[in-house]
Length: 192
Image (cartoon, rainbow, N blue to C red; front, side):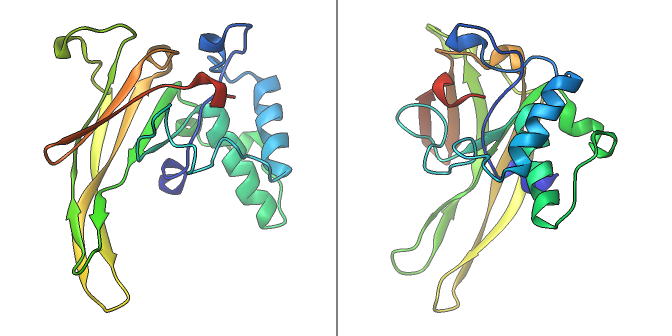
């Protein structure tokens, strides 16, 4: 499941408006749809690191219940197996968006890294930092990076989980690394 956090994208209850493209409930029909997508091996563009989160780009990725099921199906397919819906772990179906932000690494010379210290969502049109939506859960992840010359550096990435209801068009993801904050508006065109 941790490997799934490294990938990225969104899904659950499709409607006509862009803000409602996120699948809100993983019904048996949605599970079959996600498995079919994964078995085709075409989970992209939902897992494209070049897309990242939002317009303007934030060095992070995310998964949703729909995407997590599609990724599990793709993983099974790559092993010449089939994902049975009964095999899907309950945590993959949780109605949360899981955001993964790696540490920042600069490698001009000896590698240097900066840990992620916070991931928050700002609601659409928020005017104050007091309006930040804190994650339901967040956890630092130890990461070690190296270069071709054998130098290594360690830092902490972060995984944060947010309610699907908070993940909507116009909201802004903010990721803090050291004293630098990345911001990007959520682009629901990339949402399944």
